[in-house]
Length: 232
Image 1 (cartoon, rainbow, N blue to C red):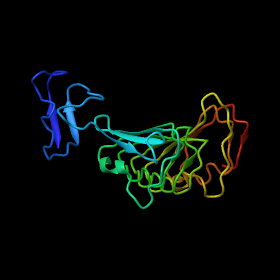
Image 2: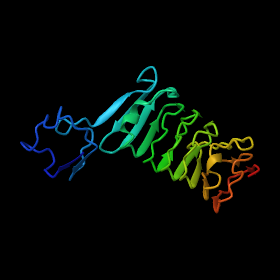
Image 3: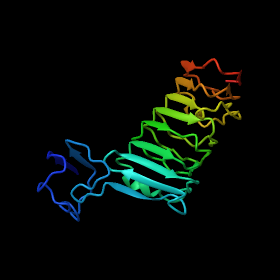
Image 4: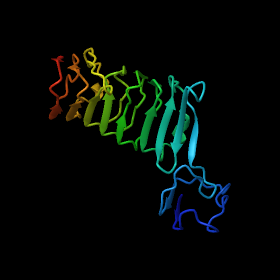
């Protein structure tokens, strides 16, 4: 259902606070001629939120129904969702962006099937990604991947649109890229579709087997601080 609202900002007498409450309708989108952020509009729920670990302090998620952003924040690991559905999947129809702050891992199957995401940036706070964490996220075209992360080869299985990969390092800290076993790069399943690779300046080396089998690679941007190259 789409609700069109053409009134003025902070209207008086235009719409009561409970105008659409308990209407039995699921509102997918509210169209307005101004942005309403972090406010309740006519009794509509703007956010879906909850915990993604044993406590909200460890890991909390929030889906903003207006900006269509799924965000995570906390100071610990995200739980695995293997065998169970992540609670934010109920709004997978609207989620277009993902923002991650503070947490140190992404659980198995946590973000699988979010097909409307087009660019994914994994922050450098993340150290591990679980099995099939992004399985079937077929809309992603740009993957920004930090050298600090350990991920299985199936993490991005079914991400059939990734064509650009950026290797990112930690801000203000020069670190080498990790080595990979044969056919064990997290982007191995995208090896025939990635045509562009960029490596940030804080990355000091290219790991062994990093870009093995990338038969569609057309451009790779390497800066002059690279000290050693692995077997591409």
